[in-house]
Image (cartoon, helix red, strand yellow):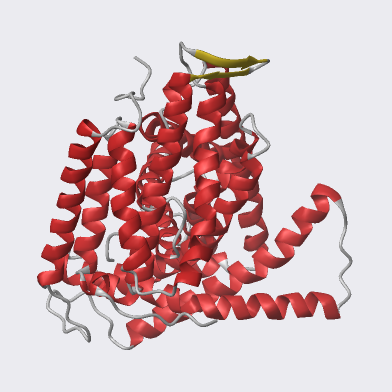
Length: 192
Length: 264
């Protein structure tokens, strides 16, 4: 048995990620338009930028997939000419690492909505951390900073937690996930 | 869609090196807290964008429209709600100060600098060369690089599939519901078939690649060989020159009196 990710895992992860890479790219202008409403309403949709890691991990369920997916999606957004340029790569790396660590903390054994939501929150925290340097958000008035953090976390839970989980659940019904998931305990028991 | 363009010296820079330089530049620009310095850097990068990407000016203008949006999203919150002492306007929650205003402008310009650099990279780098170069110069494992290239090739297929889906839904007379549940249903009726087909296709491609003996062997041959050239040096010298000149001009001919936009 070869350790780590096999070619199939990587290829499937990257294909999924590039789909989200396209969405990430399109999300930029949308985010910009929503932002004109003011008071950080746009932060509610920020969570879309954490979704690749969660969806890919929930589908493939292997260590390393979340990080790879988020980095690949960011790379995709970057080579399609995303408006945030190189910043995307740094944010992608941070967000992917955070989600990966969260799944690792569950020893890669939890694939439920809670784990997905927490991974979204972890990514959000990573992005907020980078934003202290990138967006000087520490220099916002405190109430405003709290709204920003609150809405971004809420958006993360809703989009990269709840929505991602529902999406993968619907995908499971198509049977396609069986192609790419490792055999589980239950499968072995069914054989026995 | 026509995307023809001329090749310029920016196209001949080693893609890995170009990427690494951009990452270093990103970190350097994050360290700039002087808005004068940043503005000068922006001019240096805009020169690359406007004159050296080899794309027609009409397209460049079109691509640069979102820059304005980037500027607005990056700056407005800070201008209206940032900390500061010298009040210009206080109206309800909005509190514009001189400090928050310059800090907001700084963030806006920073956003544009990154946008310009990112677009310059995207316009002057062929993804295939980038991944070949990443394998050859930065020792990226071939299974990652080839997966990426295969995935990029699948994107047009997905776009086509999207069209087909659209037609199929129309032919079958699927009614659109209103509100948030309607939106969710619409999203699902597109994303599930698209994702599941893509996963199946990716899986088949991986199986086929392995069947054709795609291997992890250390020494392999490449269809494209990428190396370094004088253009790499030229790019480095240009950026170093811009940075030094930008700093010099910022110190001696500032536009704003502020030299550090952070709240101290």
